[in-house]
Length: 375
Ligand SMILES: *Cc1c(COP(=O)(O)O)cnc(C)c1O
Image (tube, rainbow, N blue to C red):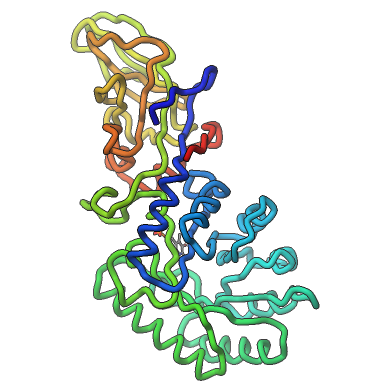
């Protein structure tokens, strides 16, 4: 990240594709599963879905997971040819385009199963992964719906109308014991699917946290999102402690500096006032760019090797920092977050400042911030 911000660029998120590659390689080795599903939903957790998917495949991901079909189709259109899986669907969805693009479908209900079967053609047989509810309380077929779902899936498979490649579920991460209980319910679901005549080759349950910490949840594949971006799902355990490298650096340049007298207020409502004569520096990133307003007065930025807290309120496009007597100049680089090993604030520092989690901080970086992909 030593290369300067390119001329004329106001703000950027630098995405280290090599870090994503490294993280996938590391997590794949940790999980030790036959397959590795890299999750790049929500525009790759804000990193850019295409760049993330490409880097993940280079790092050894065998499949790509997204939330919805449109995300999958965008990746397919952009040239990603790895198997793609999408699992959250509009109630009245028509799966034809997905099936024509060989996008595999997470299926939670008989209605979705019927829609998948209808979307097949001579050249494209729908491939589905049956999603079972094991306790998270979101989608997935509940245990009482398993007999009908598995029987119908088996019938459609034998009729050549679709193929069932996998069975999956998602953990709540509430406690180790509860995750283990969910894994037990999951094992039961797989046994029932097999008893119904299905041979789901890919059983997958674990996301990042369980891929790292719960071998009992690994099965044939893990579905890893947060970790591939180099972030830790565990409070109190850093990326570095997990051997991961944060892939996003959010940075900008000081857009203005101003000498002010003691008592001068900063930003709307003057929730901050200078204690003495000082210099205010203007950081041109705001809540439109995903910098949470809740972090007003609490988040911090690195400028010239030092950390400065946000002074006053974060506005839509900008916020102020009080740099005291330090010789900060217009054009100096300001890093909001990056790899803490480089001295940058961590994504988690902003998450703590805003009362949220690292997932939300990176995912909400706005569309106005260009992503610059480096290796
Ligand atoms: C988002 C998501 C994941 C990835 O979760 P991480 O905690 O980011 O690894 C895996 N599976 C499902 C169903 C998801 O929605």
